[in-house]
Each structure stands twice: as structure tokens, then as C-alpha cells.
Length: 224
Image 1 (cartoon, one colour):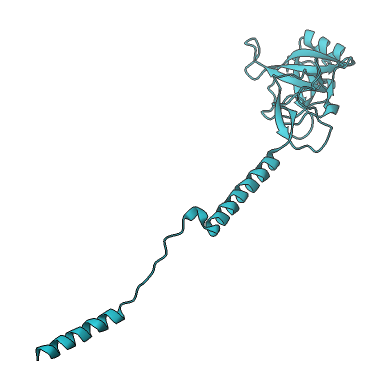
Image 2 (tube, helix red, strand yellow):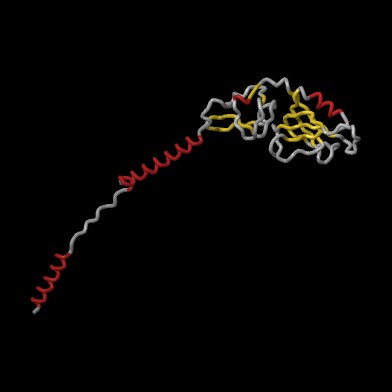
């Protein structure tokens, strides 16, 4: 009996041994040797470089001058009213950095944030205009800015004038506003002191009106 049991036990052990199989697991591949990983890194690097190139190309431009505020014709151009910006002008018509001549003047009225074209710069002052500061009894509209054209009117000081007393008279049809100065305490609350460019032909009338007993009024030309 014991021999049979031993034989059965031996057969069971042999069956277990024959069912056992060896599973071989390969060692994990190092990540930096994986071609898929390396290819992914290459694609990411190329994407970053392409994006950087596109951004740099979009921002690329030439350093040119730009106005920082409205500038009247004949006004001096310098660091107080211009700045350097990079702009893609695709034209040679603008003043590049370092090319603004000494004593440069505005050849025409310039708006704020306007790129400085070579045609708008001159070094010769216009002999037909004069700078003049005048006091006007009525204030200017809030949207009036340097470079705007104005009419100058002479108004009678006394509203109860006699029949033969001259009324309002236009003394200059197109003067250029240079800037609005701080109000003087001797003026009325609504009055202003303004600096103008006055044509030499209109200058005698303007001076006569300033020395007379009347008051001056400035009226912007064009839509408000």
C-alpha cells in the first residue's frame, strides 16, 4: 500500500513539474534609447523653434520716429514730442532712427501716434507765418487739439453798442493752433490763452484787434 501511495505522490509531483513553464521578461528599455521618445522630443523642439521664428518675424521692423502728441505745422520735432518704435513700413518714406535732422520742424500738422514721414519734416521755417499768443474770451471745444485750423473773430466788448458801432468781424480765416496755454487769472473763467501760427498777411489785423477794446474769439474750422 505504501509503495502505491509513493508512486501516486511521485506522479503528482511530476505532473506539477511538467506544467510549470519559464516566463522570460526582458529588461525595460532605457527611455533615452527609445526612438519614439526621441522622435517626440524632436517634434516638440521643431514646433518651439518654428513658433519663436514666426513671432520674431511678426515683430520685426525698422526703428522709425512716431509722434507722441498732436504737433502743429512749424513746431520743432525732438524728443519731447517724438519717440522711436519698431514698425514694418515696407517703405523708405519714413524717418529712421538717427536720421531726424537738427532743427527739424513739422512741415504740416501731425496727429498723435503718427509715423514721421520724410515729407512731413523740414529744416526751413515758413517765412509766411508767425507765432503769436493771444487771449480768447471764450474757451475752445474739448476736442480741439494742436494742429487744428481756427478762425479768429473780433467781438465788440459792449453788447449795448450804438447802431453805427462795428459788430463782429473775422480777422483771420485760417490760423493754426499750436497749443493751449494755462489760463491767466486776468481772463474770464471761460477764457483761454492759445499759441497760434498766424499768416503774415493776417498779422496786422490780429495785432490791431489785440490792442483794441474788443475781445477775440477762436472758432474751429470743420466738423467738431
